Length: 189
Image 1 (tube, rainbow, N blue to C red):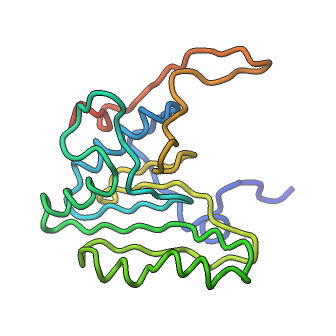
Image 2 (cartoon, rainbow, N blue to C red; image 1 turned 180 degrees about the vertical axis):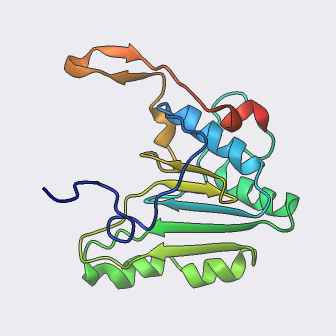
Image 3 (cartoon, one colour; image 1 turned 45 degrees about the horizontal axis):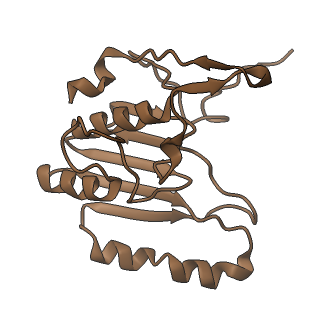
């Protein structure tokens, strides 16, 4: 038998690093709140990689408990205003399913124009380096190279509709228990 490790630096991943803390966040509403809380502590860099990013996405439904605007777009600009040294990088999939529609799609997503009109410290890119019909599907948020979120929820409109319970086999719902690392709590913002 050969080496059967899933993660092999240089082959299946860039590198392997130790994490001092780890937590699973199951509820989308909790995820949005934790991501915003972590971004509120950002000093140097916020990186968001997602299949879909929408500036209208709201972090908290109902009563807002965290400082700053509640919508992603306004919040990111507010963070740039609050933190003069902060840089924000956004990478969104281009959903390139058929090359015949590239002219239409790229007409709807003028990335060069968005980057010219936005802050020089906010960098937006569309990821199109994939074979036909393929897109990246990662959902990653990295703050100051110190806190990272990786999961299955996009920072987009209506992604937070999943909340409270997750379905178990045969449609029986069970309550969600959430364990969160101490350094990532929304209350610490």
